[in-house]
Image (cartoon, rainbow, N blue to C red; front, top):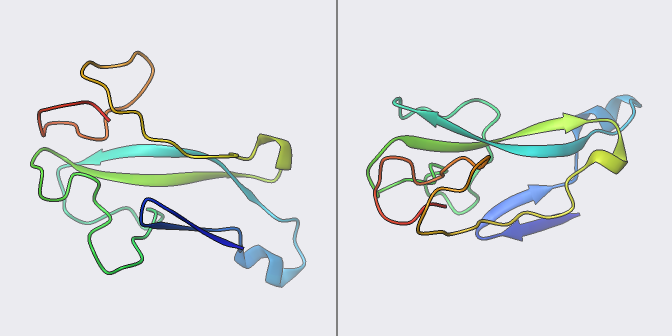
Length: 104
């Protein structure tokens, strides 16, 4: 099953399923910052050919979203949301780090 969330493709397919292994599930999505323009190898891909840098064209650091996996279905994420706020929120990473404006 494939879902599109704000232009990003999230797929339940996992290559481990081809090898008769227990399925794995996305446990959480991590916000990763970088000064380098190359995304981490496991960064969420953008499906329409645009940059998968969430700060693309906004200035600031390069921001990538990377998944963490678990083999326990009850720990898998059930949804994904982006909170836009005029101020930082304790415990949440800013996807707009260094770009100015609202926090995401």
